[in-house]
Amino acid sequence: MSKVKEGIYGVLKGRFLTDESSFDNWRILIFVVILLLIMISSSHSIDAKVVRIAELNKQKRELRAEDIDTNTRLMRMKLESSIRDKVKVNGLSPAKTPPQKIKVTTKVE
Image (cartoon, helix red, strand yellow):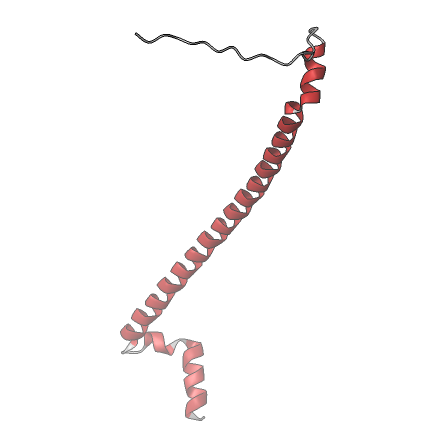
């Protein structure tokens, strides 16, 4: 058998973990496993944040639409014709003559 085949069979059988010099291999293997766990954990954390951002964007769009709708209704309520119709029920109507200014003068002693 060639050295390449022996090396492959040795890796597949796990000889690199049971030999005399396997302590170095175990340290590297544990280090790699820890890095993989950190990577998986950060990946899940990022996914959760992306979902939260999507929810907040949806909520922002809904609130913006509600704000625009409320502003539109307010502008319609502020129209003079709308106000005239509402106060007509109470018997009020626009004045026929324009208002007059009253000037008050005071003497300073």
